Image (cartoon, rainbow, N blue to C red; front, side, top):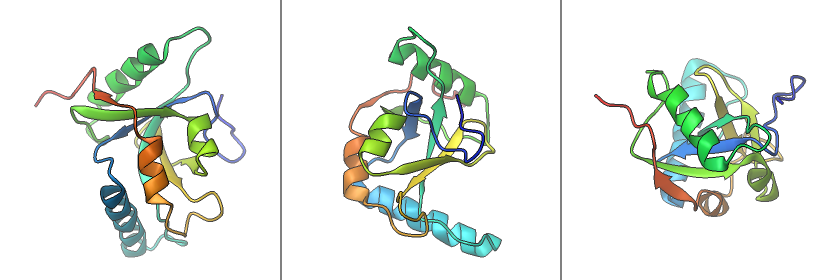
Length: 143
């Protein structure tokens, strides 16, 4: 269940990142996020990368939760989509030294960054390792 007080991603939720996944690409993504925040006047501007997350039901297989999330995102034109995804969970992110907080819209959107301060550049090399379970998107958007 979502922590409604601070919007922090629960440990047992399934997390999906659409590519790219390399540390260099994650760093570029974090920089773009920061610059977009500055342009939009958001204070403070944040260095973070986008992920999508969904609650994993009791006894639900990870693959089933991933499929449910990807299906929910497929028809949302505000959400990214692609053939490749990386899969993790809230616990792996927090154990890896990252903070994920809700940032909707679009639905299910979270931003991941430094647990100390989202205004600091996250350790993108470690974040690349967190996104090591790469798979084919079970429900890519058909154009």
